[in-house]
Length: 247
Image (cartoon, rainbow, N blue to C red; front, side, top):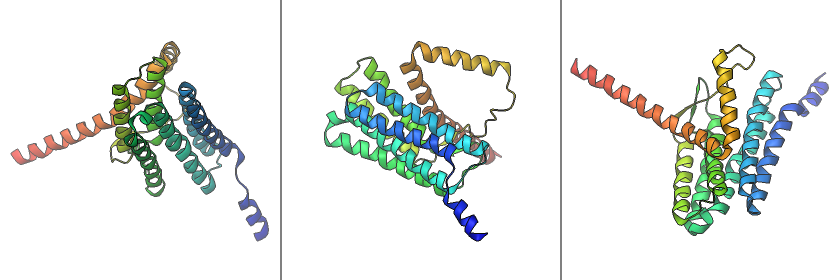
């Protein structure tokens, strides 16, 4: 009986790990595409990794196939897809023109991603918020910027400096304590108001009309949302303390 139990434990769940492998493959392909100068393809590959990353966890929860192995494999895959890949994409596209500063910025982003993932793994994550900008969102912000500027042929020394600043900000937000709303508790099987379906249709149309601009804007707004929420929180807290002092 014990032998049978140990034998079963040696196996791994196939379905969720297939999505994780797909995300890992897409992240690796993003690196290959960036090395060939195909930055729009590299950005698309990172976005595919994001979709696979969203699906593997949901599939594991829906099919009751969550495991320690799956969690560790997912984290290692995320480091490649959302750490190494975006760092090399942004470096190959713009940071390479900034010399030593450029590759140090790329490394800072990679290190921040590793720290963000390690902190996520050891800390208890509950409620509706992430602590720090999630690594997929940071990767989406960086590669979305690359895709937008590259497709519109906007390359200059000023753009290279801007990309370095954006990369440092994204890295800093990942390891910060800024809170970001997550959608893990969104019930896809439950009912939603009719207006939600309409909003999704409008969103799809907008992305189809101008995918590079809209996708970059979405990730930019999400990154800014955490900062805005934190400022609002401290503003309310300051106002509350001021009212207590007046009393």
